[in-house]
Length: 526
Ligand code: FAD
Ligand code: SF4
Image (cartoon, rainbow, N blue to C red):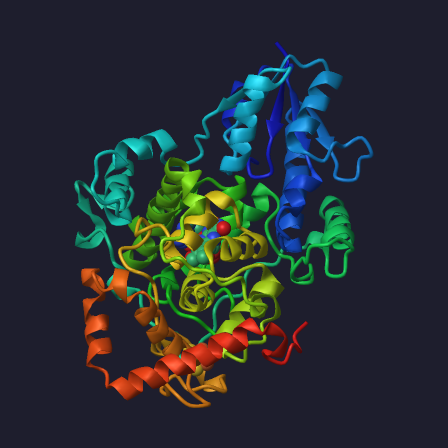
C-alpha cells in the first residue's frame, strides 16, 4: 500500500497519528491552497506563519527520509482546494488511498468524511492524539451531567495527569488560584521583551514573507480586506524557534504570569503572556511538554504555585474544554444566538477609531501584532461587542481572521460562548459583561482617554457604562433569572427612574452613531 498522507497546516508535529501509521513508501503531501487562505480575510501574520512553518516541516520530513510533495500556492496546476488537490496528487503519484488526521474544523472533517463515501479514492481519517483528551473522552465526561463546568473538567484532568498534584492533593491546597491572579500592573513596570527570530536570515521564511505580502498584504488586490501587514512578524515557524519561545517564557515570564494574568497595558501587548498559542495550535509544541515544563519549574521552586496553576489551567483546562465543547456541539453550535444579537460588525473593529482608548488600542495592537492576550480579547473587544449586541457570526469571522492563533475549534467557543454568551451558558455561568470601572481597575488606558470611567452620562461619560446598563435592561427577561446576576438586577431596580432613562438614552445615542460608521470616529488610522 502506498497512501498519500495529507498533512494540514495545523498538523506540523512528528507525532501526528497519520505520520506514525504511514508506511515507509507513503507520499507525504502538503497542500497550500487559496480556498483555505481566503474564506475569511486572515491576518498576513497568520498566513505567513502557517506557510513558513509548513515549508520548514516539509523540509524536516524530507531530511528524515520521507518522500514529500509540496503543492505551492502559486503552482499553475494547483487545484486550490484541499480535497481536489490531494486527490489530484494521489492519482498523479499512483497512491491507493488518502490518510489524514482529524482536522481542526468541523467543515473540513465533514468534507473528508463525505469524500470517504463519494470519492473515487478511499479516504481514511484518524483521531488526533495531540491533546490530553479526545472528543470521545470529552463526550463521556459530559454525558449525563446537568451542567457542564470547565472547573470540574479541569480538576479531573489534574488528577488524571498528575500535573501540579502532591499525591492526591492539588498543589498549594486548592485547584484554582485565580484569586491571587488579579493584580493590575504597577506604574514603573517593564515586561521582558519577546525573543526576536531573525526571519530575514532564513531564505525559506523570506520567500514566504514576500509571497504573502504580495498576495495578502495591505493593498493586495482582491475583494476581501486583509488586516495589518508583516512589519512586526516575529512568530516561531520551526520547532527550534518555538522551543526558544518556551524557554524564554519559563525563564523570564512565568513567575509573574499569575498575578498579572488579567492586567492590560496601554502600550505593551504581551506583558507576561507566553505567546505560545500559535505554536501549540499548529503542532510545533505539544500541550503535554509545555505543561510538564511548567510543572517542573514549580517543583524546582522557580515559580510560585499561582503562576504555574494559572498557566496550566489555560492549557489543561480551558484549551481542552473548548475543544470538547466544539466537537461535541457542532454543527449546531455555530448557529447558536441565545441572546438574539442582530448588529453587524461595527466598522470600528477594522479601523480602531472609536475614540475609546481601550478599544482602539486593542484593535490597533491586534492589527500590528495579530495578537491580543486573553483579557483584551474577552473584556475589551469582546465586552464591547457583547454590550453592543454584535451577532455571533459577524464577531466570530473577525476573531477568526485577525489573530495568528485563530483556529475554529478554539476561536468559536471562546467568541460565541465565552464572549457573547450565545450558547446558553456552556462557556460561562453568566455573561462576562463589565462597565468602564473594570477596565479602569485592570488597565492604565483611562488616564489617556477622552472619556471618564467615573462618568455615566454626558459628553465625557465612558460609553461602557451606559452600554452596560443598556445590555442589562435589554436582557432583563432572561438574565435576571440567573442567580449570579441578582445583585446587578437589584442595583438596576433601585436606580432612580430618571437616571435609568438617561443611561438608556445615552447608550441609544452611542449605538446610533456606531451604526452610521461613516460618521463615527476620525477614520485616521487607516
Ligand atoms: P497565555 O496567556 O500565555 O496562555 C497560555 C496558553 O493557554 C495559550 O497559549 C493557549 O494555548 C491557552 N489558552 C489560554 N486561554 C485559553 C482559552 N480561553 N481557550 C483556549 N486556550 C486558551 N486561543 C487560540 O489559541 N486561538 C483562538 O482562535 C482564540 N480565540 C479567542 C477568541 C476570544 C474571543 C477569546 C476571549 C479568547 C480566544 N483564545 C484563542 C484564547 C486566548 O485568548 C489565547 O489562547 C491567548 O490569548 C493566546 O496568547 P498566549 O499564548 O500568550 O496565552
Ligand atoms: Fe475605555 Fe471607558 Fe476607560 Fe475610555 S474611559 S479607556 S472607553 S474604559
